[in-house]
Length: 144
Image (cartoon, rainbow, N blue to C red; front, side, top):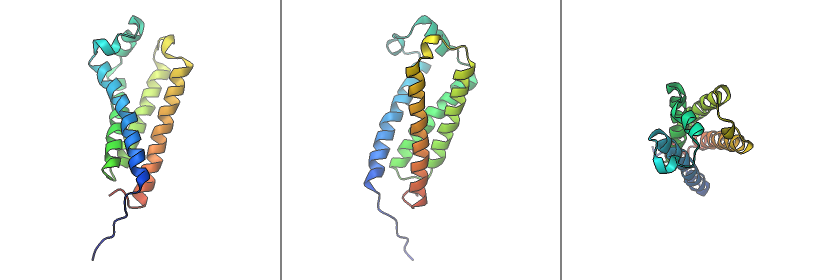
């Protein structure tokens, strides 16, 4: 008995490639901040650098979950893996933890601008969309 597998819809490639590019930006930011890359961090003030470099371990951990969950989930989406869905959920958990830290930490005023919060909202929308989209694709049998 043969199992019929649905064709990969073209929009999956579009969503997967855009998601991978978008989330690679977060992965780059995380990596450059964690490695304290001088040229990358040169545009930040000493106060901002102090904030970034003194995250408690749990805040670094949830940031990592958010960033790497989304990046790996994007790659899994391109590979048509059903594991994209839990990876995006892990990313959402990391995002929730990161926002909790942002709201409770002594964050420099320069990092609490309307642009920063708008960018955070875009991150929320993107991960919620990716959860919805990957769940739909899994339900249709596109992700295996």
